[in-house]
Length: 301
Image (cartoon, rainbow, N blue to C red):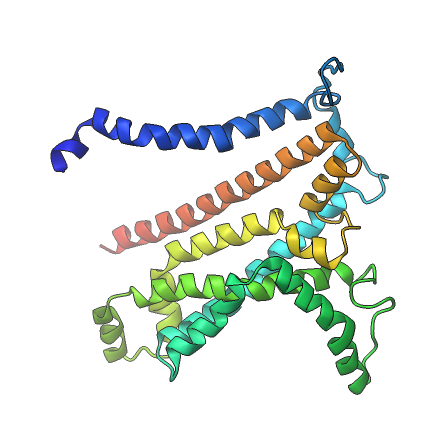
């Protein structure tokens, strides 16, 4: 086996089919979409004419004054990303630390938190929609709290926030399980040594466990950011397919309702670039922190 893997040609033969498949289903469609976004319009049928318009659609995307403007949709997606990073992920980490440090019924709690992940997003959206329309108003009335005008999903100020909550709730268990697996993979010798030195509770978590699972935290942050920028299904169901206040929703409506295929292609490329830029920034941030920590270690040595 080592002889096979040591030969670069053998490696190329095994890797080539995957590279070709990935290129065909991912790379090629992205470049084709990019080309479509630079045309004035995609020909709907043979014989239709189209011409190169450059970045006209990208300028239009961020031109103020358009109804349901795309810049507002981008701001909403960034808000969702911030909520996911600063509320959802810390909560997932908190649960993972509790379970990894040993609680009675650990396996049961782990499975319970993960159950929403395996449920369809459409089903989750319908369940939360029923909650917003019936149970939650009753709870607000019993506590003498003011119910938003036109309901939680009909109010312009609250509809985006309340459409985020089901997705945040659904994927807490997903991130929790990833972090839990990373925490359980920490060697027992390290935990025992830290415990002997007097580390326990928050000190053990912040000084030993969390620093040792930084690669997994980086993965969770990447998944969270990318998922935030391409969020579609839950708001689409909850807002009854009439809203363009998120980039993916706007792209879908422009393409399949307004039939502006080139303009929708430009929005799709923007979403891809947004995910790429934030992923690169995340890698830079984690690389810089790791480099600084290594530098301090060498200086101490």
